[in-house]
Image (cartoon, rainbow, N blue to C red; front, side, top):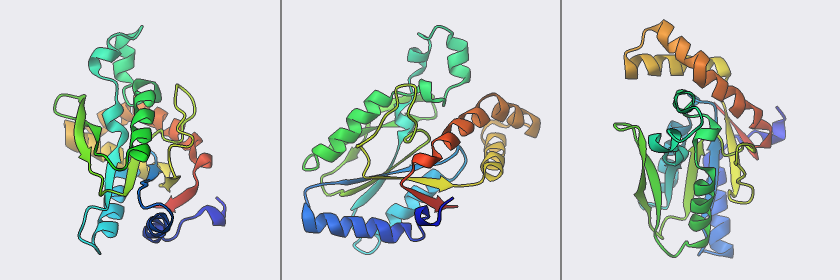
Length: 222
């Protein structure tokens, strides 16, 4: 880790980017990516950033979005050569729609004067829901969190579509323990079952995410 990459004041950086945009082209939007391991705390961190930006004005200047809405549907996974394996590895980079994500990011940046929709992931049915979220023109800062925003294989390449992309530098052991506890709480798994789930999918995905860390513009320490 190099010192010049560490972002010590993420909220200050967001406000700086917003102020700079207002002075140069107030019609634009700023889109920041937040990447991290599964269980690193990306969603929680993105929500905190948004709250900190919105609180002074009391207006929805910033929103947090997830790339989870770009999961391939179960119907799409059923078309894979090995549907059972595709479903078992759901959450891996090849089980998402990176082209669809790229299109939406372009819309956010290029159509800032118009409302833009974004998909959500409905955990109750285990599938994405198109156009579930509406981003209004008054939103000028968007934080997109996800595993593979810095990935550059399996059809992923978001170069030029994010103003900056930050990596949440959570230690692997901390993130994996959080996932174990999450699986136990959400699915009623025993610890052994949760560890098996990690070994078969989550840890494999975490290793892929970790390989993209060097591409981040900034590191945010957990």
